[in-house]
Length: 384
Image (cartoon, rainbow, N blue to C red; front, top):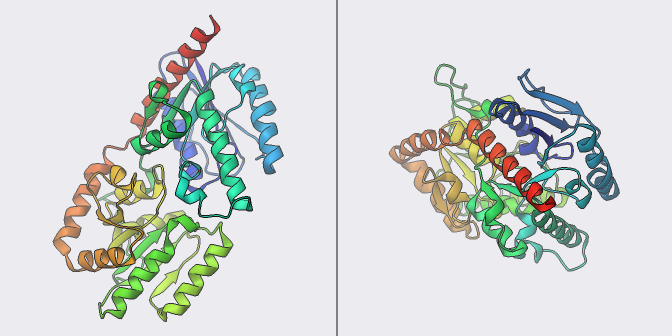
């Protein structure tokens, strides 16, 4: 069997970090006689030489029409040219044209379009509302079209079933592995990145649903109450300029600009040290499928406090203190409690190490091949 992995248009930071390791994991766990070909954009991280793995670089699609051309014409052409038995879409988008060429495996790692309260966040017919509605319809159609689906949480599968009908028979839940670079290595512990000072840390792409504003307000309330808290550091690329301006305005209005800092996009090599040494890693996001950041925190044996909304508790698996992301007091009081409780923080580090050990690339590779074999069998049965 030849498995073709399409990640050309996967552009989120998590996808860029993991598309190489996903391809390597699939090749490393390939059954006898099977091989992997990965299609990806020229930018990104190099792939190590791996048996049964080859790669091709293709330019990213430009705009909606470019995406449509890629999925409806170019990707089917490449699948036919490479004689692929199954195609795995890391972007979560499939087309009928591709289904006529090969078996299809869909990956759904973006839960935002499946969440009604987030679509209602925008005025009907506004640009962002239309974008989410189009994405939702595209993802729902792709899930129905797919011969198999890989989803990184039970919560994600529940949301897909709610919109696309029951897809459980062809769905494979495979939790996102911990990225290799984020794994804690006792022989080479990362140096402290903040001059030895305690700090809170939030690593996330800057999008409105990531709830930076709730975190800032919770921190502000605790300081106003007289709590002596570590500085709050936030980092991650900004793909939502209006929301970033609201964050900057909230920091200025708090009067805590010397204690709340947005670092912007930071080098990948700086992330493990920040995650490991943070007094608390905060993850107040309101909508996820399975955040790569939570896996990074676990892999770095970091202390985590996260939202109590799904799938955050499912991913943490007990290795986190939970709070209500919609209640700034809940966020702030959790930070106060953890910053005072050294024993609880040490316990959370131990739990993080144990939980991270469950999220392996080998398990991910095995799930990919189970899904691919299911997809090929389903396509053959359909063609009879």
